[in-house]
Length: 292
Image 1 (spheres, rainbow, N blue to C red):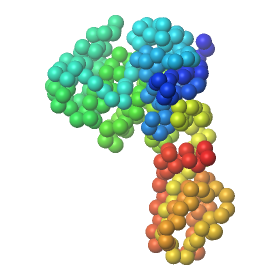
Image 2: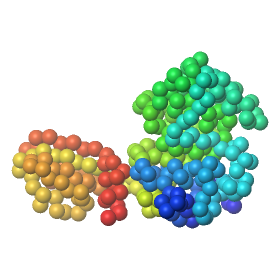
Image 3: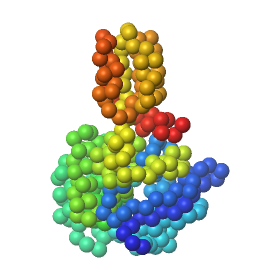
Image 4: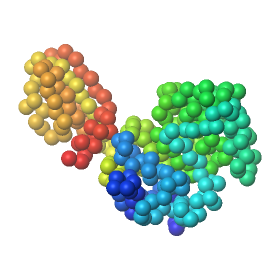
């Protein structure tokens, strides 16, 4: 079994004739934060649901702590924290009741950890669950996933709905969990999140894994998206290597460039620039570039 917390081999899930995932394989080492990234509908949620035993694969295998996700599901689940993309509750309960009820499933006292998380995520435990905004539901979901200090944490698009300050608090909490020895697998369609937090990542597209790599090597080829408004620049000025997704509309041009930012600045230095924006491209734009 070695040092893998998760081992996925050739996992396929068909929904009738429709593909969920197709031959997905990757492993997550004990103690690492592993990003699972791809556009919406690529198969991230399907994979995570198989891992936590909510659905069964059509073929292939998945193990957690060396145990089979299908046959040993109930013993594995005691030591997993799971945050689904959509969080559903017993709506009539108050937040505090729901948390205590969930904590009662575990064979240990979770009160201290639960209270710490409630405080850090600024949750009002007296509120009724059906009165919560999407962001507040998400925060309660995070506490439910972490209150029993699990050794494996599986998070599906965890930051959607959290404001930027809360996102940062959440990232801090996840980093601390890793320092305590937990393993984290989380899905996202936001590359910058994964770059901040993860050691390695798998990229999934249309149900298939197209790349598994460490974040450092993906960062080295980081793409930026440039938009430049200028009357004198033309497409041929950018014919050199490293430029792609070139679009020109009137005097405005946009393109992706990977590598040294100074190369672009040198090219435009002799021109009168009216406006210039440099942004991180969306995952989709990077995908188009990687996988023509």
